[in-house]
Length: 125
Figure 1 (cartoon, rainbow, N blue to C red):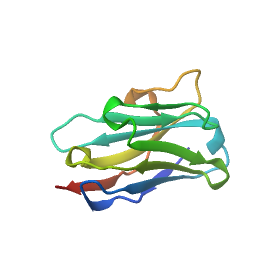
Figure 2: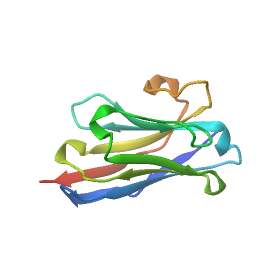
Figure 3: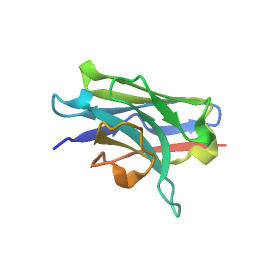
Figure 4: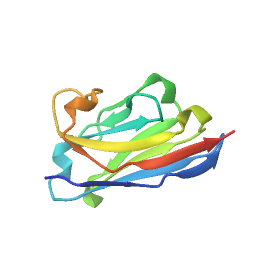
């Protein structure tokens, strides 16, 4: 079973940047698509971004397009979410998730099999 651990969250002022990391166990990391989700108190879990197994394909939700960049380094078993121009609306707990690579990237959290514990991102105004 794949284990995922997120890190890199913290408190940042509006306009600042953070880079989240998602470290996976095992040697089959490159066979999985990686998704990023976030959840704020009182709100439903929201899709943020996804990246295919080789990094060839990416997908972003509209609110983060142009500000966030998803990437991965399979040699390090690590996925990344670079977050720039952060806004208070980005405040949430951020999770990475993994699913065996499919033909298309998935936005539905129910499609992902493995999840990290999350890392908190708080953006102050």
